[in-house]
Length: 443
Image (tube, rainbow, N blue to C red):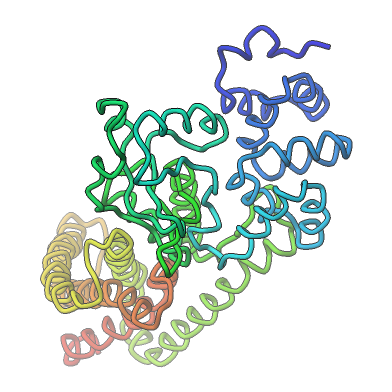
C-alpha cells in the first residue's frame, strides 16, 4: 500500500506531514499514517495534537501501538501520557517494555509542571579522564539515540555534573587531549523541581539550545531541549490568554474538552462578573434621585465607566506581561504606582479635553441640547474622566502585584475583572463629581 506521502516523505519534515494529515478526513488520515515507514511514523505521531494521537492509537492494533510508544522520545511520550484521561494512563504505560516503562514512570513521578517532566534521559555524557578520541567513539556508538549532539556533559563516577562542553571544542581538539583539559567547570543547570515556566526564562537568559537537569545533590538526570521549551512557552501564553479573557485555563485542547467542562471553566468567572455588575446597578439606584433631577447625566454613564475600564485593562495588561517577563518584580510596585499615576493623569486629561469639547461642539452646532448648564455639564464630565481614568489605571496596575504577593497568577487580573471593578467605582466617582459641580444648578 502507498499513501499520498510515498514519493515525498524523504523530502518532507515530519511536522509538515503531521500538518497535512490534520487536513485529511479521519479515514484518509488513518490510512496514510499507517502507510508511513516505522521510524517516520513515530516522529509524525509526536507532532500530532493529543486528539489525533488518541484517534490513531484507538485505531491501531496493540502491537503497532506498543511499537510507536516504545520508540517515542521519552519527553514526547510523557507529554502524550499527560494528555490522556487518568484511567487510560496506566493501561497505556503497561504497553511499554520494562526499560521504557521505568523511564516513563520516573518522568511521571516528578512534580507536575516541573522541568523534569519534559526532560529526556538520553544525552551524551563522558568522564573527565577520557580522551577526545574516546569521546568520539562513544558518540558514534550512542549518538543515534540521544536528543542532541550539540552539548557533551561531563560527569564524575557518581554521575554528578561537572561541566557541559559544546561539541565544537572536541572537534577542534587533538585526539589525545583529555576531557579535563577542555573543562572550565562552569555550567548552568536546572533543578528537577524548577517550574517549566521558570526553566523557559533560563533558556532565554542564557540563549541555550539545551540545559542539563540535576538533582539536589548535583546528579545529572536528563536534559531539556529548546523544542520542549517552545511548547511550554506556547502553553503558558495560551493559558494566560484564556485567563485574561476571564476563562479558567482549559488545560486540554479546545476540541477535546467536553461541553460540561467547558461550561464550568467559563461559567464561574461570568457569575462573578455578573454579581459585580449588579453592584453597579445598586450604585445607580443609590444615585437615583440625582438622575431624576438631571437625566442628562445618564447620557454619559457608558462613556465614563468604559473609559475607566479601558484604562484599567491597558494598565493590567502591561503590568501582567512585565511581571511575566521579569522586567519588574514585586519590589517595583512603588515605581509602577508613581509611573501609572502620572500616566493616569495624562490619559485622563486627554479624555477630559475631548469629552468637554464634544459637549461644547454638539451644543453650539445645535446637534444636541444639553440645557442651559451645558458648560457645567461639560466640566463635570471632564473632571469625572480624569478621576475615573486615574483610578482605573492605578487599580489595573496594582491588582497584578496584589495577586502575585499572595502567590496567585497575575493573569487572573483579567480585563473583564478589572473593567467590572472600575465600573462600580467609576460610577461613584462620576456622581460625586456631579454633586459637587452641579449642586446649585441641575442638582
